[in-house]
Image (cartoon, rainbow, N blue to C red; front, side, top):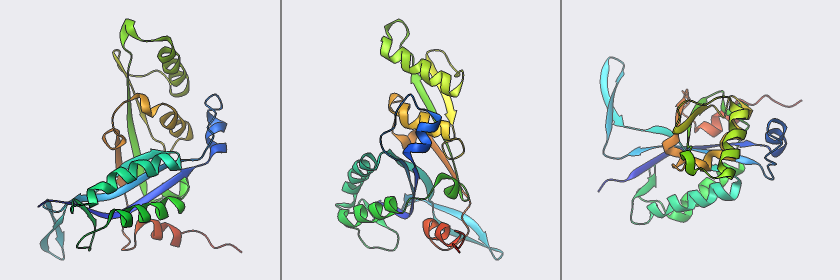
Length: 217
């Protein structure tokens, strides 16, 4: 039976004040989060070179799997935790993982969320934001939101569907636009985002970043 293996988790927090500074019209009332997972299927393998030998390991990729306020992120992660029941998902090295264990680990990662600048040391993230215009049937409230988004991000590509490419870790206005209008896309965030990571440490990504923080004197 195939199952998903979770190798690592990471999270970043965008403060309310910072988001409201670049997009005061929205009025963010709580900090916002992006939550990432390194995972892959147990029955998919890739080849790589090591000391002049060709070895194989299970395929794994980083994905952006949840975003929003803390409660929104945890609500999404709890739905994913259901896959642990029956063995559909487990942590790397575990013969099985209880849903409660997955939720507890995710909650701990959210509580340790780093700043976007800190995560940017190791990770890049781009999101394709696509919003259908609905033509003549587009209601006025939707038109106003699209106009607001255009003023924030600039003219989009496309006609029937407006498209913007945002980089939330690089640009705070991009992050604000994603949190404020991402729901209008309609797709799950993991189908909207692409993630690239430079992570050479054997430590989990969050621990590696914690080790790199400058010492306080």
